[in-house]
Amino acid sequence: MAEALTLSLLIGISVGVSAGYLGSLMVLKKMALVGDALSHVALPGLALGILFNFNPFFGAFAFLFASAVIIWHLGRVTKLPFETIVGAMFTVALAVGILLIPEPDLLEALFGDITKVTILETVVAVVISVMAVLLTKMIYRKLVLGMISEELAISKGIDVSRTNLLYLLLVSLVVAVGIKIVGTLLVGFLVIVPAAAAKNVSADLSKYAVLSASFGTVSTCSGILFSSYLNLPTGPLVVFSGIIVFLATVLVKWKAE
Image 1 (cartoon, rainbow, N blue to C red):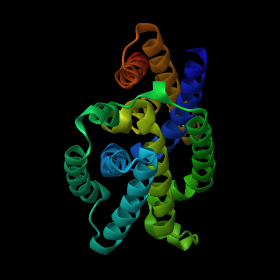
Image 2: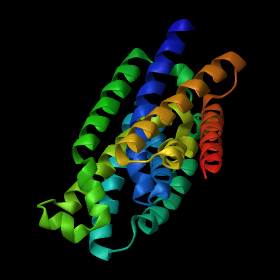
Image 3: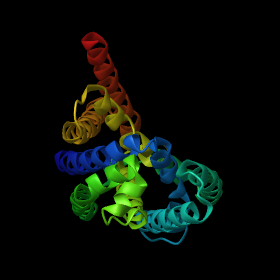
């Protein structure tokens, strides 16, 4: 029991930091719903893993990566907003996934089950999360400059298109890992709400990114601890913890004005 809780908390810290940090850019880019919708794209991959007896999360990784590349390419070709393209893809993926996943496994796929985490999955989650944060840190200011003015970013020698692709791939990685904690239906929360909470109380970009990662960690860890203590599903409790953090920042902002 103690070992399972320790592994769960390690994954929670890793995913909380990485999802919060990457989510800070999602909110700045006004792409919050993209992170949520991407999580549903993983369902067919999870379904194939369950049906063919391999680790479902490898299937989730594959589908999320492929979807990120397709979304990026369609965005370049059609010039449509990412939200529009993702919205079309995730509804199809959600329908296919629900049809393919056997009913006994559907609840775990939708809402996660961190109690079954293994040491190998924990190590993979930590490595992926650290890599995602470090790579995003390297391109953070490039992405922000591209948001402010794509023409200015290009004039500075930044390949905006490739930078956006790398960012989408990193988000896909973090979303795939986060599915283990809160499932496909709720993992979008981890890349939206901690960042939104940080935006309420941040005065500058550096503080905003750090607070976003911190709030993500508080949400995941407190949700996992409450889940262990109350013997309730982890995903919803992570969400409730994050909402409490968000409401607290709203109160702080309201009192400051």
